[in-house]
Structure formats: structure tokens, C-alpha cells
Amino acid sequence: MTMFHQLRPWGDLDWVLGHLPGKRWSLLGAVSTEDRCLATLDTLKGCDGRSRFLAIIDPDPLDKTLFISAIENRKKEVIALGVRQSEVVDVKLMAGLDDIEQEVLKFLEKASSDIVLDISSMPKRWFFPVLKFMLSDARVENLHVSYASPLSYGEILSENPEPIRMLPGFSGDGGTEYESVIVGIGFEPLGVPNLFTELQINRLRLMFPFPPGPPAFMRNWMFVKLIEEMTEAKEIDTPDRVSLHLYDCPQIFDALREMTDTADRTSVFAPYGPKPMSLAMCLYSLAASEAFKRPIPVYYSQPRRYAPDYSSGVRGNSAYCIKLSGRNLYAL
Image (cartoon, rainbow, N blue to C red; front, side, top):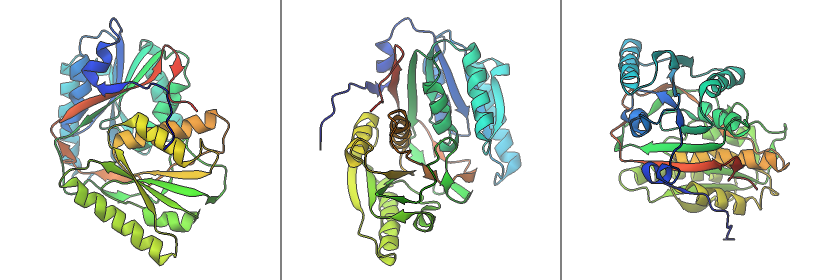
């Protein structure tokens, strides 16, 4: 694989931010039923920047009373860690792009120029456009994305998925034929079969998170098996697999650059893998557009209902330096 030499720092949140002393970090995070939604806030408390938390409300919770109670209790914990009550707000999971942009603007109006975006519990339908708006805003001098990994996941993560469609702000140019579809391998292939009817697929490439570790690898392989069965039924060539470190966002970004020949080969992304892998796909799609390449649409089937026991505990918390002193580190 071709080597690219852009330094893009990442690592443990404490270590990364420790190399940028004296910053007034402002945090945008998401309230959820997961323990990890508090991990970055707990690390940053006392950093003096104005923070904001979005309680992203499912439109169709399995047990509405239990869900609302859990969210309200978590809001109290967020406030106890120093976020003003007025900065903990309810938003709709299925909000439109304009509404998402307004939430980013409200945050940036009061935030410092040093931003941390915590995607640990933020659905892809939100964090993809949020990151897009933050990267394009000149007020943001330093931008880091944090991701807290859990100790364990529940058996069922989500239900009632929407039909697969392009994420807000990540549409294509109207075409349906692309040289490759690149899929991040995760646990639940929600809506992936519909990619075979939405698009004319010439080549399918699978990004496999490594090392997955038990029992995650069984769920990853079930995902792969389903896709391989579909390609066989559609008489498409067997997809090739690329194993990538599941936390190494810079490596995944460079792998996408290699697979797409610096976005000269047309492609579509389907981010079903771990959040750092999805983060790399988000950044690469944005980078291709900034470089005036053909747009890379991002397809995803958004669940309308997340399990209240989606994950538990916190294993670790990583940070990725995206923008440093006004310079986007993830550009082509």
C-alpha cells in the first residue's frame, strides 16, 4: 500500500489534549443511556470552555417511559459535571439538515475556538453533518473528535431501521453506477441488501475492523457472510477484504485514499463499522468534495429505535486531531 506522510495525531484523550496545554476546550456531546456518553465530559470538566449536550430523542422507543426516564437521569449527570442546564437540549433523531446546522451554530456562538466533538453516543445521522459544519467554520481553530469505547455491547443494538438512503449533507451527483462500494463491517447490516437495488455495483470492498476480539468477531463475520451470499446471488465478484485497526482513523483514511486512487476512482461508502472507521469515511468524503472530485455519497439505514442497553461501561477514550491551528489535517 502506498505510504502517505501527513501526520495526524491520535491516541488516548488525556495524552492528545495534554500536548495542547492552555486551551479552553468546548465540548459538543450527546446524552444517551450509555455510560460512555459522560467519559469525555468527565475528562474535560474544568476546562473553562462553554459546552453543549444534545439529547437525541428516538422517534419510536421500545419502552417510552423507561427511555425518557433514563435520558432525564443522564441529563442530571451531565449538569452535575458542569454543563449549564440551558445547554442540555432535546433534539429529534430524524431532524433535517437545516435543524442540525442550527444546533451547530448555537453551539459555536458561545464556544471557544478549541472544540471537542464527542461521537461516542452520537448517531451517524447526526455526527456526519455536525462534523461537516464544524470543519467549514472559520471560528474553529482546533478540532478534536473523541470516541469512548465500551466494555461490552448488548445483544440487540437497534430496531426499526429506515430504508437505506444517503446521510444528510452526503449525497451524490444523481448517478447510480460507481466503480466500487466500500462497506465498513460492523454488527448489524441494516438495509445493506438494498444497496444492490439502489446502485449498479461493479466491485464491493469490505473494511474489516482488526483486532475485533471475541465475541465481536463472530458478529463481524456474520455480517461478511450475509454480504458474500448477496454478491453470489447477484453474480457479483466476491468482495475483497481489507483488515484495518479499528481505532486508527488516520490509517483508515489513507486506506480509502489508496482504494479510490485519491478519489479518482468513483466510489460509494456504507459506514456500518466502528465509529473511528465511520469517522474516516466521513472525513474522506468531505476531503474528496473539497478537492473537487466526484462526490462520494454515504449510504446508511438509520435505526429509529436504539436499545437502552446498547452498551455498558467504558474501556478507553481516544481522541483524533482533525483541525490544528486552522489547518484541516484530513485533506487530499
